[in-house]
Every structure is written in C-alpha cells, then in structure tokens.
Image (tube, rainbow, N blue to C red; front, side, top):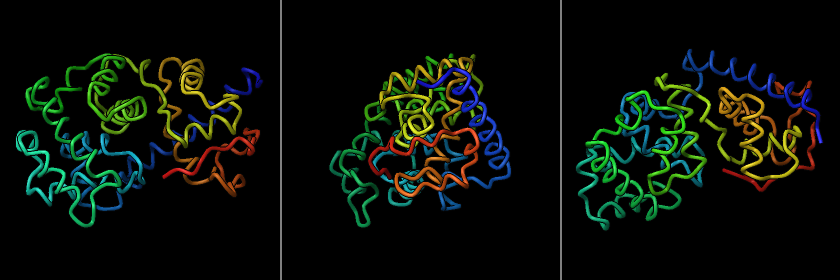
Length: 257
C-alpha cells in the first residue's frame, strides 16, 4: 500500500497539470468537439450542454458532444417542449436515420425525450434552472441523477464541467467527485492511488486527497489516460506526472472509447 505522502505528491502533480489545462482552455485550445458549430452550441445553449452530458456514453466524447448540434439540424430546433411532445417512434427514427446519431440510438433517443419531459415537469421547461440557484454541490449532483440515463459518471462530469468550464456559481465544491470513468480508473490504479478498481474506493480516495474539491483530480486524469497512459504501449516518457508516478503498468482495464 502506498504511503499518504506518495499519494499527496501524485495529487499535487495532477492538480498542477490540471491548472495547465485550465489555462489552455481559457485560450480555447481545448474543445468539447471537433466541430466549431457544435462547439458554439454547447457553450451558448444550456439544453445542448445538458443533452451532451446525457449522451456521453459508449463512444468517443468528441462525437457524443457533437450530437446536440446534429439533432438540432435534423429536428430543425432544439426546443425542450417540442422534443418532450414528440412520439417515441419519431424521436427514435431521428436517431436511427443514417448515419445513426449514437451507438445506442433507440435507448438514447428515449433518454432525450424523457429528459425534456422531466425538465418541463420539475424545472419549468428551463434546463438552466437545474443549476442557476447556486445550489450545494451534493444537491446539484443529485439533480443530475434524477434523469434516466445519468449515473455517477455523468452526474459528476456534468457538475464538474458546469463549475470548472462554465463558471457556474455553487455553494461549495466538496460534493464534486471524480467520475468513475475508465481513464480516471486507469490512472488511479497505475499510480497506486488505489489498489483495486472499485468505485467507492476511488471516490473516497479523491475525497481524502482534496476534500474541498475532489473532482479537481478528474480532468487531468482523463487527459493523461487518453493522451499518454494508453491501455497498451503507454507513453510514460511524455506523461506530465511521470517523475512521481510508480508506473504500475500491470494494472490495466479493458479498452474504452
């Protein structure tokens, strides 16, 4: 088992790298998608942002975050009331139209419709009412979890992005966890922050390392997992935390999108 001092050194290195990423993001060098039009929609349309969080599953993130833009093109709008009232068959057909909007078109189509219905029923048809009352972080996380199709990973991701990228004001950051994402899991295992792949263990470890904002460890782990710490042939020599990482490369997980 790794010492507390070692774990805190890893956490410090991750946080430092995260600060570098934040500076890059402020210069618009890091994007949600590779499509400039989709990117602008995400930044300027709260429903597009929310639907991207909901749809971020089973495919590369850049493609998932482009879907709200493509959905708007096919529907001719991105109106929460119109989507909520559309028939199941029609919304499914929109997702199924070639090329399919998602790897799981039927399931995701219904998630989108049900999400819009929930937004109308609980948030007066305005998705930004989920977060614009300066809630506590735990409350905001719980609001995401109320939507069918959103679990721990998406709820933490959505909460984290609102605070980190969109600068939404909330009362605290203590309830923003890391997401139980395959990249985060791989980094926590290979650095020795945890000794087994267990969601509760990973969340608790992040909370202990940075109790005021556990989720600050999420994005640097995600980027390192995608760019350097590959499942096979990791590029440790290029990794920004290489000088402190034990490189437990036998700790591996299945391939991920």
